[in-house]
Image: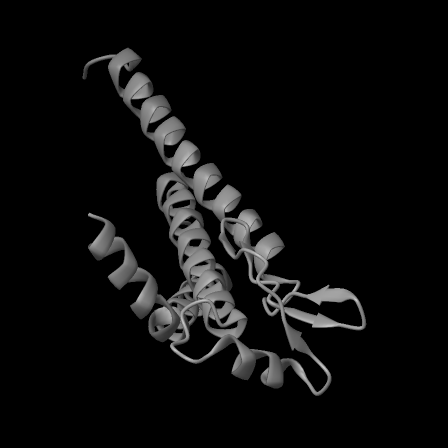
Length: 153
């Protein structure tokens, strides 16, 4: 189980562009459907929101893993050189949730190699995913109650 999770984390930075493209494609599809004047079912709209949320979460997390150097096979000193000249290596722990890799020190300050936007966008997109799933369940439940209480023809 741990090996498959690690393998997933290794391939996630490679899948980040694909999941980002999928999210953009769903947004564009929703816009095109609205412009053409078609009405989508509520359940479909909520499902799209959930899929967009998880795609953005995976893309952001993968980008954070890649740019934060958490899965690099390079020496930590080399990563500090990527951060800029004058940075030295620090043995501060890295975290996978929230994504953080403060391994470089510059003038007494720890420098996090993960970009600042990664964690907020990740948690917002996870909340969009949860909202979408709750919306799908609620719309399905309300539709089943409406069909149950409708008079038989």
